[in-house]
Amino acid sequence: MDRWQKMQEEIGVFTDKTFGTSTPRAKALHLAEEAQEAADDPADIIEWADCIILLLDGVRKAGYTTDDLYDAVQRKMEINKNRTWGKADKDGVVRHKKDVA
Image (spheres, one colour):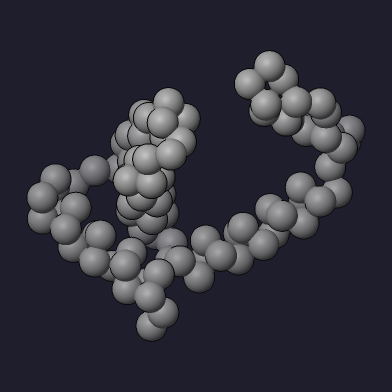
């Protein structure tokens, strides 16, 4: 077992014991809050760690492993590489242009 999978399982044991049952949606909503905190203070690595904890636990709650997440990231990167990207907005965010079907 790799260290990320071990970490996901350790997080799961802790969160199930500490917080009881929750849903992948609840994890995603909490992740959005933590992502805002990271955006507010990007130099605080602990806020980024909160995001990873919630991401790994949400993925686990949805029935996926870290290997599944890795594979999905690889697939998504291939999609991103083939997209057309716009210009950065006032906050520096760059979004892809709408895909043509």
